[in-house]
Length: 421
Image 1 (tube, helix red, strand yellow):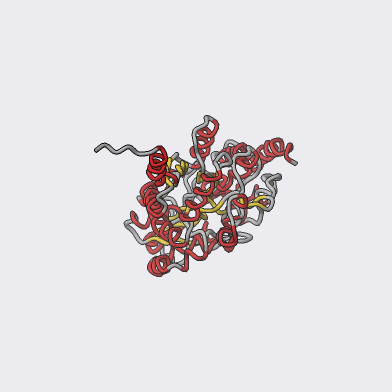
Image 2: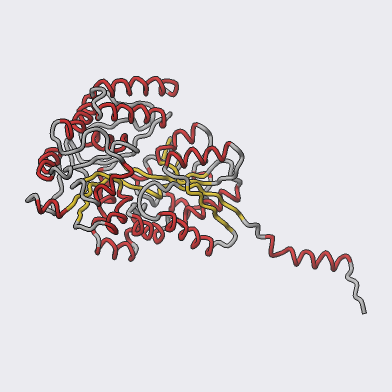
């Protein structure tokens, strides 16, 4: 006998069948920079897979976009063309430009309740400096670093130096650099392509002078202490002969260190795990040396949430960011890459405690936060930074004197920033 369902029964059946689909899948697109370190894509893919397993109603497409500049360009291009993107890890120093272009939302507009506020307050203050602007939090730290000094302990021993004592002052840097320099290798390499402003900021800080004001409106490129810092950098090759003349490539410096072309290098802590895995020699890691004071700028990326994301997408993006910055994930991230755990709680996890007990260099970048400052950032950041980068390279290659090059960069920065003051 054929059975006929009533309209009410059909409606009820249809509703029952539709019920499982009521929990709408939220799809997130995350732009992510792969700039330095080891196989970071595999690490990030693993974290994303773990997140999706715990949050089956959220799917995440991670788009790996090159270095930080590439990531910013590609993410903003996607937004401008209407392609969906809800969040990204971009330069911590991009915050001013992203705010000015009205592309991101402060986290205070996304979080809810005391628990999420406590999460927002849980990060190292030094890592929040670039993300907090005018009382609101625009970026949350993830792929973060300071500059550290890597050195070849075997070469220190051969030169009669104490392998447990890296240079602590500029004078010691020069003295040890001379002892370590041979026909076949440099005593020191500081990269001057890629992110020359970052390395230079470290030197300026060590000489007692910031490069910019805390409100992003003023630069101090022509300050005598800043000029002196660039003169010192130039002197490492031109006068002291411990560094190659001209520029030193950011992208190939790690390999140069691993191949023994230099006894010491300054580079991101994000290279730490790759150096550990590939060095065929005993190496050490130290804080950067001091002149007037010790110090390094922070570096790396922050999470940003884009303004065009819907409320549901913002909430899902926040869940992903909370997951990736949780103590356990931040600890594993630090172990896998060399980047810092972004909160004190990360270093209280058993995994990271065991790791640093076995490998103490993993604490150097974090400990350096005590003397770290916010990475160079202003309004019109990209253009101001480009002028400074050009000045640094002009001085290091001998095209202009440090004073002339920095005066030109200062004039250009003042023109660019005048409209914001």
